[in-house]
Image (cartoon, rainbow over all chains, first blue to last red; front, side, top):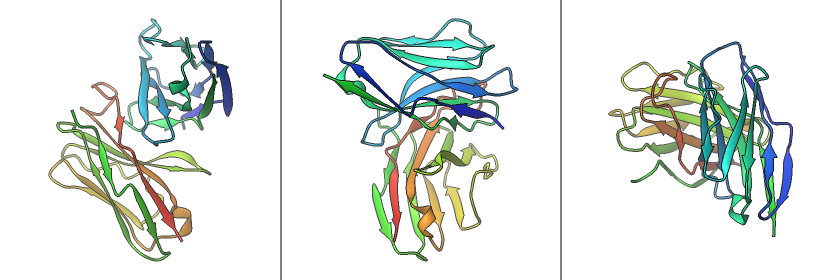
Length: 113
Length: 117
């Protein structure tokens, strides 16, 4: 079965600094998708960024970028110029042909002013 | 446009009672998913609807759990004879097509927090 591991239960960063959240996964499939979702205290899961496994180029969305290493099965999220509004739980997720998202346990990010 | 909506936002019930949780997906989205988020288990897939196909119920934890989707839109998750371990946040998501080959990004609702006393 596919698994997603987030090894950092909590992380903190100073406002305006850069932070990287780690994610590794285990799968035998070659075609799949990877996602980072943000969940603030409001509970709403918000898509941050999406990566297709067949694309070698790393996805970017404004201040958010990923480092996708397919051979290493690693998918880390970099947040640049951190803002107070970035404080939330961040979940890494994997999806293959079964259409089900498999989530990691999450990383709680604190942004210090 | 409007996002995924869920009701109620919070539900408190007594052990043994039945509950119904509702999800309104984004208009035009053919795929709908239910997940459960609990402290002990994290985020778990429950059930998936895609168009008129038979739903994928492989994540339902017991036969006390059921779900239906009427008219390819609104979905209801029903939990019969609730137990304390059913306490969790129930999240609904929808996507335009579903499936890894299509536009498969899942958009989530705000969830229903269920507390079983």
